[in-house]
Amino acid sequence: MREKSGKTDILIVGVGGQGTLLASRVLGKYAVGAGYDVKLSEVHGMAQRGGSVMTYVRIGSGIASPIIDAGGADIILAFEKLEALRYLHYLKEGGEVLYSTQEIMPMPVVTGAAEYPQGLEARLPGKGIDALSLALTAGNAKAANAVMLGALCKKLGLERDKFEEALLACIPQKTAEMNKKAFALGFDAV
Image (cartoon, rainbow, N blue to C red):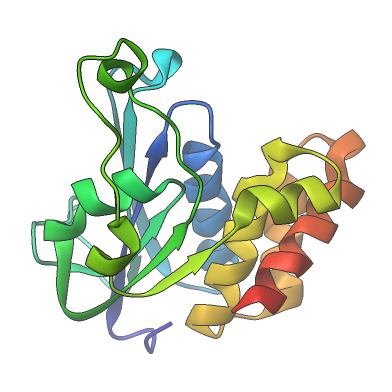
């Protein structure tokens, strides 16, 4: 993460139910604990029905607005491939994309009105992570968000122990061990 006098803008995107909003809260909790100013803004429409979810996370010093403009994100953390492509215009030049290789079929694909785009990896800059498989290794597909948070932690060079503490403070205690394992698998995947 940048020095406390600078800022880091992170766009977290995914599909409703993937834990993108939880991920933004964990990132915010970590940043506040590390002494940064943090602003979060969640944008979600039909999230309950598998719709697109987007969260702005701005970390630094003197952050006035929670909104990241198109072309302003330092990093896009995407929990699904098509969502990474959908919001790629938010990435600033020289920014990075960290995305899950998971494919969740949007409603037009499910109904047969459209086809899921092929060859997305070739159109996405950055690192694809098989977060779903790693989450299943950890014990549950729902831990894919913890996998991606582990990968983000390493990518940004954040304090692993403190980031893991922030994660554990935001989840049900009964899922702690599974999420710790998923986080570690994501951290090691980068």
